[in-house]
Length: 287
Image (cartoon, rainbow, N blue to C red; front, top):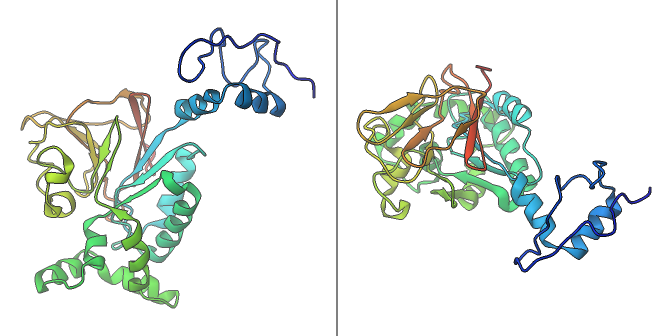
């Protein structure tokens, strides 16, 4: 196939990536035709920054709320948001319990971790914490039994295993938080910044912290509390807003954005897609 690149398409200046001027679309030539493979190879050799810029431009953060043993809903949502090869995938924790497919969820999440590699993040939710703690108090054991432990036991048993089989992998992959220059994520909530000064009770277990609406730090995405619809909490004790699905909006700079919408408890599974200072919400419920 004939290359569509004109001879002097690229004009370099002193920028660190070798900036390119007068190019409308990094996926097309100046004639508007798609670049062929040889063109892409040529661009990567002449200007290595091109590949870096293209990946940064296209990378989305796809954040998924509490899954709670619902593998069909997880697969439906992934099909809907279509994670790409340059996207980052962040799961807010609580993979198991309540829903009937915890074993299947575990296998799906393992596959996602392998597929996304360093672009995969799994947060430690309270349900992972119950499984990973060396010894639970009687009170903690009663809570876990009440919030769906039995469904996970049954799901793994039906496949010839035990839920404890998942513990080593979860211990290796679970993190307390995710943070980048644009957004940060924890499972339950925050009191103050930075994240590291909050205790694990606040980060993983606290069910009241978000609804108290007292955190005014940099934007943090959480799950954990099973709202009817996703919501943003400004942190002033008063301002809160239910958020629509399917609509691009500017990312708030501060406060809490909760996307747990009750999957496994009769609700839906919600994803937040964030890129270039904006976000959109999608759900298995479709509205």
